[in-house]
Length: 54
Image (cartoon, rainbow, N blue to C red; front, side, top):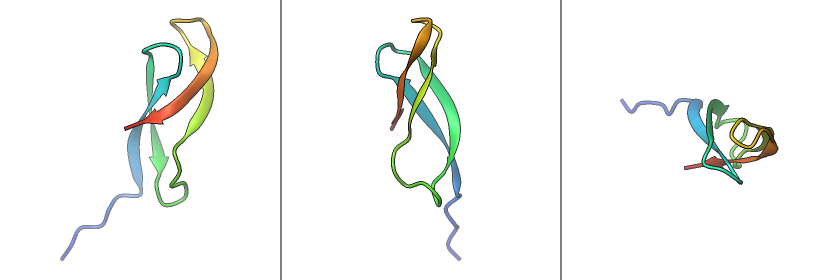
C-alpha cells in the first residue's frame, strides 16, 4: 500500500527585507498557492511582507 501525503506540512516564511524566518504549518489540501503575510520582523522592528520559501 502506498502512504498518503500528509495534509499539514511545516513551511518557512522568509522576510523580504531581512534574513529573519518564521516557521508555521500550512494545510496543502485547502491552500495550494504560496503564502504571503504581513508579520512583525524583530530585526527591523516593524511589519514587513513574509513569503513562503522552499
